[in-house]
Image (cartoon, rainbow, N blue to C red; front, side):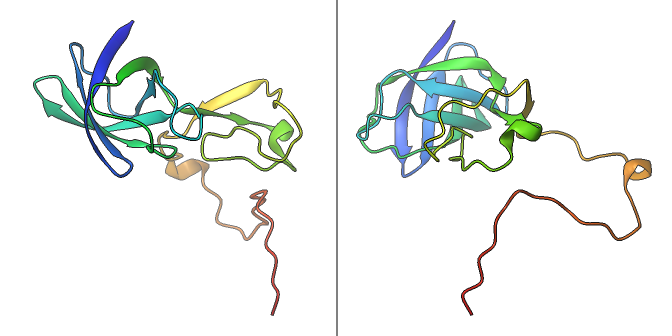
Length: 138
């Protein structure tokens, strides 16, 4: 288990110190919960050298402090994909917030992945289903 410590907090930007540096886009979990009682996940975005990394918190950092223990997960942030995610409302980490309970998705995918190959792209007009509902009050 790769553990480290928080060395600085600047809003949602968190600097951490590790013996073994986590990879870029790797998820790091804070051992303590924030002031709201939520688990905080941080995505590593920079490797600063000498075991230091900088990342962005996916939730409020209120209540976190310098010296708190962080644990590198060894994997990127992943989200559920497939038909099971339709008609649900999620937070930034894709936990359901629509009071429907835990989502039972068979597949998960990382939030960062390579773009599709050029030959896989379509040039014809087609409907893009995003699952995002738009309400126009005008």
